[in-house]
Image (cartoon, rainbow, N blue to C red):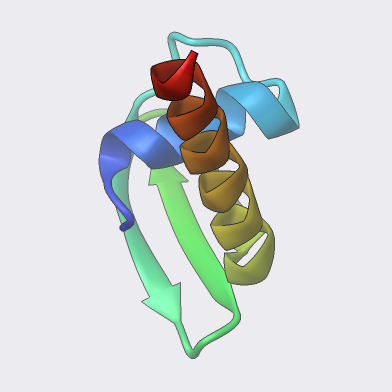
Length: 68
């Protein structure tokens, strides 16, 4: 699932953005990229595949934590 909170966490975890970054909007372009626009007028394009891999990794970590 794609939402603002998860995209922001991806940007912080994987791309080392500072937590103060605010996302104005995002859009999925085709089936390969996510186009993100920030409140400062800048933007970022991320791979949908890499984002999906990160989500799966996070889910795996959560499941492992629950099963402890």
